[in-house]
Length: 445
Image (cartoon, rainbow, N blue to C red; front, side, top):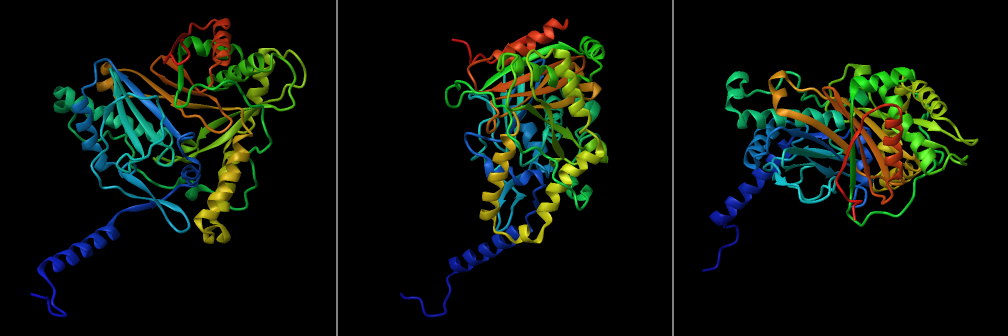
């Protein structure tokens, strides 16, 4: 029997009602703008340049996958800053509440820092290997401090599940030090009329035969912090200045062989802005300064290279200069012309700006700093590690982090030749440091 005009079936009524609820549910989803630094990452990210970083914690016991998944399932709905997916708007990318079940925890079976694509639309992944929990984060979501904030709470929850006595003693709430703050601290603290402060002149780039597609080299060097402080004191340098200087010196000796260069060796050094502005945001809040050494003669000593590096960093790491760096970028973002420009045109401009700035640095060395855990969890935690994915023109990156009295300098790289890494650790050994080196073995034949 044919349905009369205007007659609506019960199924159609239910279908329309369901669509209305879905539209209403969509409008109710929480969303947030990207911070100033995050705008760049969706534009340049892909399989060959993932913009993913890893922070991992090594425990003193084998990881139980089911409990790790349960821990992630428990904390993710409470972490607004990680319960997000990336969306494309007319003028900007933005992030929106995900709402899907947490991504699946799995045993690590690929090289690290791979592109984060179809992962239930989440912008991070959690894997494990024997005693280690790995958190990999797409940089649009957070920086290293935001990643540590999430990983520690995940680890606490996991340990409470695997050790019920901890739950009985501590309860099941988040640690009071865990931040859920999603303030855009760039926007809050920028000042108008800032001048351009970042480098755009080309730097010396390390080149060579690449590892096979998809391969990713990792090399860790462990050293005792009290002994390292003694060495740094002898050079009148901070730990960060000393290690960045040793990296530059290694490039100078191993790649330039102590000869002059038309281009400077320039290392990008991210600076965490939170201490300067009393911020606890879990969004990105850092700027890049550049440690620059331009060899214009032969045979600089390490003392000379370190002195130049030290002065380069100290002249830049002050609140006034750092504020100028990020204020310039935020001011450009807030220009009416920029806000009204369609996203696809912004993307073209941002790719050009990125290419220029990327080729202005030989490498990146970032210092995550000293990572601490609550006293009750210390007996279960062995060590933390961190490292970065490759980016355009930068084939050997360094990351520094420490736990208790041990500091680890981690190289990530995609070149077959590891002479820069060997030269770096050799220099530290010459200064009297005992360095234990381990790698993931991609260079072994």
